[in-house]
Image (cartoon, rainbow, N blue to C red; front, side, top):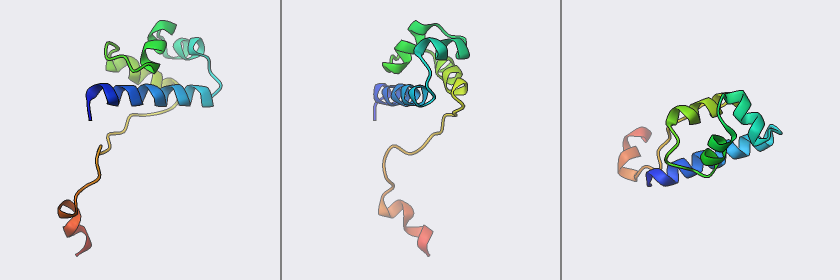
Length: 83
């Protein structure tokens, strides 16, 4: 998984959450203390946007960032879990 794909997915999730809450890009920008242009860049998955801006947008839509494995574990990795 590449950094650009991770940021692209994060941007998509922010956009989906914004729309589900009935917010415009400007409303999200106002709530998060960012510019509308920054929100647009985030939703497009721009690598030039600082992680702090993503964090502010996530907080504005009552979300948090979670780190999850990008791939499924192998059988060797989980073998001891079922003993």
